[in-house]
Length: 102
Image (cartoon, rainbow, N blue to C red; front, top):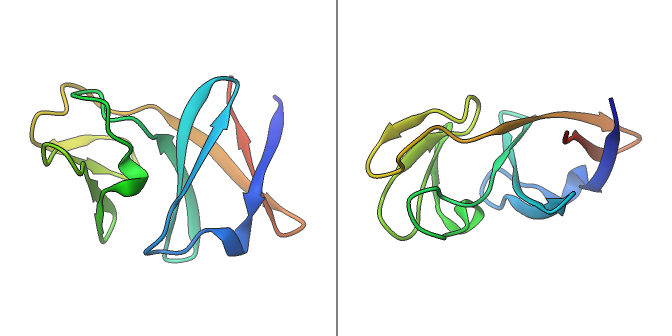
C-alpha cells in the first residue's frame, strides 16, 4: 500500500473541496463532518470536475448535467452519470491528507 501526500487538511473545507492528481488520476478531496473522502473527480457522463460542482450534505452535483453522486460511497444517486465513481482510501498524517491510489 502506497500513501501519497496531496494537501494539508486546512486546504479542504466542507464548501471548498480540493482537486488533486495522483498517478494520472484526477481526484476530488472532500470534507464532510470533519471526515475526509476522496472520489474520482471527473463526471463519467461528460468531462466536468466534480470539485466545481454543487455540494449538499454528502452529495455533489455535476456542474454540467446535474448528475448527483454520494461523496462517501461514490454511488450515482440521480441523473445521467452513467455509473458510480471510483473512491480512494484517505488518511490524515501530521496535518497532511494522504491518499492510497493503486
